Image (cartoon, rainbow, N blue to C red; front, side):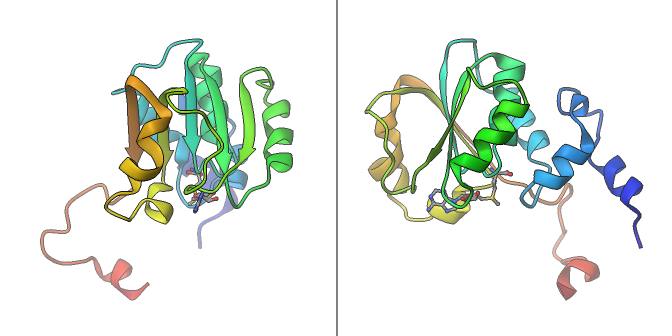
Length: 174
Ligand SMILES: C[S@@+](CC[C@H](N)C(=O)[O-])C[C@H]1O[C@@H](n2cnc3c(N)ncnc32)[C@H](O)[C@@H]1O
């Protein structure tokens, strides 16, 4: 059985140096399935994020990725979620000291409360699979929120190597 300390060590990987600066307990206690800071850090390597930009963190969960983007890139983040209340996220945002940059919002993915062309960037970290599965989801519900030339970034976790035709035994059981 894996100990708590071993679990904390698993939250840090120096392949993701920005994420490695954050408290592993804070990540572990608030993550919703995956080490979301690694996912968002990998996205930021291929996106252009600059201070002053407005970013929609769609399906932000407990807003860890929103806090990360504000701290690391100085962007203004609309931390939009459906399951986690804005009250809960505001507490975490304030404790992280980014209350001037991160705004917690409750919004359902098919009825988002934002103006057309409002965002410079939209990111979805381990969430698009919950609401974006219809072929026309992006064109019907999301793309109009992005300004001309804005960037859309989507990332979902997966295995770190190919299965080569056979799912590993330990994964097959679950
Ligand atoms: C697995 S959690 C990931 C949260 C966060 N992005 C992370 O990586 O820690 C998926 C998130 O998608 C959000 N979500 C699911 N369906 C949604 C919907 N219809 N509209 C808005 N958000 C939704 C949930 O509220 C949930 O927080």
